Length: 85
Image 1 (cartoon, helix red, strand yellow):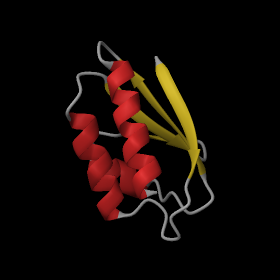
Image 2: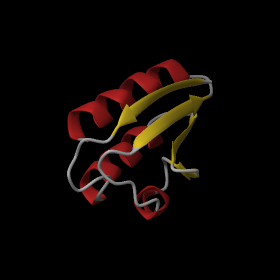
Image 3: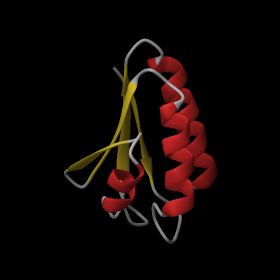
């Protein structure tokens, strides 16, 4: 399993547009991709789970990927998060 942490900088937090980008990216991999924040976890391939977590600006999130292409998944998800959140 691979993971990284990031503090959300977007003033709106994790909202529909960046959440949609994350879900689209996560679905392109075989690995199971999850996001963890504030004691909650969400499957990054499910848009409503990601948005429903209510992740706000300043929240530290941990993204994990586990599976055959976890290295590529983590690299791609990290890129999406750092560029959009």
